[in-house]
Image (cartoon, rainbow, N blue to C red; front, side, top):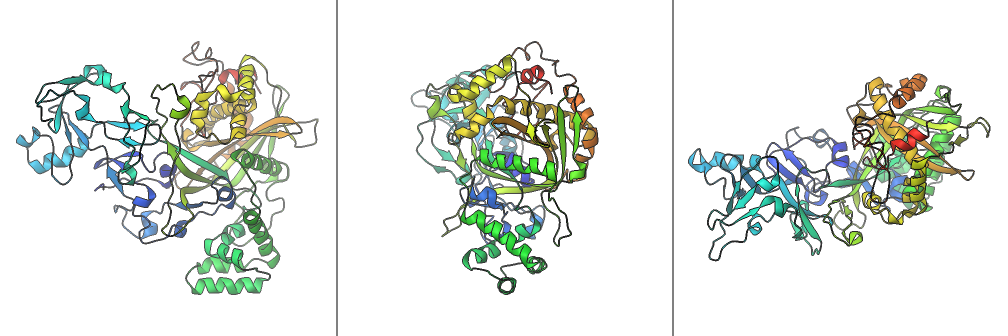
Length: 618
């Protein structure tokens, strides 16, 4: 286990780090343990930190539950105390002074064999974690291991194969580095072995080195590489009717268990049940008191919504959930959310739109852009697993494509697993085009055209050849959802989203990394329409201060700023001449014109095409 700690925000654990990720700490690099090996739930059940979201749990998570990572303050311990464990990894270290590659052993105090003559042996061992080598071994099926340094060299007969090796050379290229045995003097060129495939030993270091059989090839990769571990995340926006404070309180685990088990037909019976839960220390007295303040008709209306979600769950995919969100945003833009406001105990709705603040702009093209400010929203992000998209140059690309390794916790003697998640509260702006000929408020999207449009349309109609996009999505079951991703309308809105995020970061005061996106497509009246939600939501840090929705009256200026230099890129003409094809994940898009922070882009900076937007200006 790691001896020193490193602070992480809950959102960092979900979006960037998590089990099996390599994290840099003051005590050297570590691999974050799986929830079952974290010691987090040794003395407490995960329901103490449950995040309630029936819509997400009942559909995309297959009835699994969601827990959040508690802070030190919630656990009642000091800020510098470790609450989530990790394992030292990698164990091999490189002494930069003497060019010696050696293995770190916590119990034997082994360090660089030549440093022990220059200083105290304890100090040599202590600094060995600061010298951890930057290379590891990984395969596309999620396994992570040490580089077999000793096996890189073909030792001479009779060599004892010492526990340390010499690291010779350096500079800007790996081919300048040689790994040498100090006894038999045999060596290997590291540049050559770096490009080789190795046998995978099926190791999961996050589970205390559990091993499984694996016939996949493994590659040497830098421990800080972006493709060493990619979090697989499911996200849902809280939408009506489950968006009120009353719905959230009734979804408390203790209350929900009672509602499912006992037919509640009066408020008096519900009050008795709540009192019993409080007496049994299963329910917070404040939660019980808040529920009791609501009128009976409101309580049973909320109970009907919740039980309906449980007893009659929809067979939803991510595509249908997004369509539900799009329709809720569309309805809120037309009628507000909630349509009629009244003071309620326990706080406002978690999906709030003031109809009088919705603004429309007639653009130079004559099209009408509707900008809808969401003064309150709630987003739940859940990490269901991770992938390692590592290319081993194998011909069987389908078999070698990355698979999702689940990240979950199964309490002892229970059958329901828990995924880690985080709930974020904030504000947002929803954008769509509306028609002045169709019924008032109906979304529409103008007809696209051009060469880039034709390429994306061909991919949308025949997606089977686009293996790289399938690998990036890492989901082979939701074909409908993948088809929506390749729709030219989706690509258009996604490309515009990145331009707007960059422009908004200049005017709103939020950093571009703090603004996130959700891109929608939906079929209305047999026509594909789209929309875009830009939001800032954090569990600390950039929060709901009104800086984003305050820009709504001036959004025409923001749009002009976003599109001002769309025809120019510092990498042109190379960038603009890039065409989308079967071996690509983007069209014309690069870091200088379209790519943004990967925590802001829900598609990891793929499915973008500046040329499509340039040929179809709004």
